[in-house]
Amino acid sequence: MRSTVSFVVAGFIAAAAPAWAQSQPGPRIVVGGRVSGGVVAETRPPSARAYQGRNSGPEQTERFSRKVKIGRDGRVSLANIAGDIVVTGGSGDEVSIEAVKRTRGDRGELASVHIDVAERGSRVEVQTTHTLRRDRVSVDYTVSVPNSASLEVHSISGTIKVTGVRGTVRAETISGDVTVSDTPKLEAAKSTSGNVSIAGVSVEGDLVAGSVSGSVTARNVKAHGLELGSVSGGITVTDAMCDRLGAKSVSGSIEYAGTISKTGRYEINTHSGTVRLTLANPPGFELNANSFSGSVRSDFPMTIGGTADRNTRDRSGRRIMNNRSMRATYGDGSATLTIRTFSGDIVIAKK
Image (cartoon, rainbow, N blue to C red; front, side):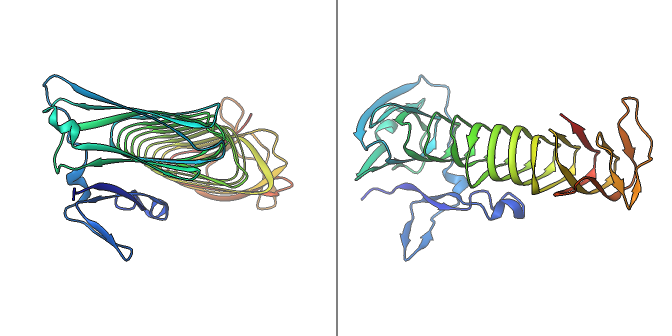
C-alpha cells in the first residue's frame, strides 16, 4: 500500500494568523498518516512535506489529460501540493483536466506522483498524491469546467487563478497568489503567503478574503457582508457595495471606495496604517473614530457632540479633527462607521 499525501479541510491560516483568521476554514496536510474516527495522525510536521524546490538539472515532464462529463450544475474539487492551478469556466457539460508534472531531479520521480480523478455522480474530485517522502515534482493544472459548476480548489505551494466560474467558488493556497475574477458566487479566497485579488463578484451572502503575508484587493464587488483581513499587507476595496464590512490589518493601510447602505455596519481596524473611505452619496452615518497617532479628516460636514464642527481645514478645504477619539454624525446618521488605527490618519472623502 502506498503512502499518500492528502488534504483535510481544517484551519491552514490558524498557526500564523491572529484571531480573525483562526475561525476560517482551509486545507491541512496529512503526511504518511491516517484518518480514523475523525482524528488525523501525522508522522511529521506539514512544513517538512512542503514543495522541495527544483535543482539545476534538465527539466523532465510528463503530461496528463482527462475529460469527465458532470452536467452543467456539477461540483469540482481539486487539491494540489506544488504547482500552479488555472481554472476557467466554459460552455458544455464536461470537465477538462490538463496537467503537466515537472521535475529537475530523476525522471523516475514523475512516476511517484499520481493524479487521481474520482467521479461521484455529478461531482468530480481531483487529488494529487505523492508517494515518496521527498521529491522535486510540481504539477501545473489547466482545468476547464462548465461555467455554472461549483468549484473548490486547495493548494500548498503555487498560484491559483479562477475566471468565469458562475457557481460557488472557494480558492485557498498556503504559498502563492490567489486571483479570482468574474465569479459572482465567490465564497472565499485566501492565501497564507501571497496576494489575494478578486473582481466581478456579486453574492447574496458573505464573502471572505484574506492573507497572512500579502495584500488583499477587491474590485467591483457586491455582497451582504465583506470579511477582509491581512496580517502584513494592505487592503484595498473599490467599486464596492455591502451592508456589512469587517476589515482588519496589523501592518497595512485600508481603503474602501463605494457605497454604504442605510443601517449598514462598517468596522475597520488597523494597527499601523491609514484608513481612507471614499463614499458615494451616503444618506448619513454615525462615526466612531479612534487614532492614537494621527488625525481625522472628513469632506462631509459633521456634528460633534451636539455642536457643529468648527475645526480647522487643510489646504484642500477638508476638515481636520485632531481628537484621538471622537464621535460624530453626518446626515440622518443611519449607518455606523467604526474606525480604529493606532498609527495613521483617518480620512473620509467624497466620491
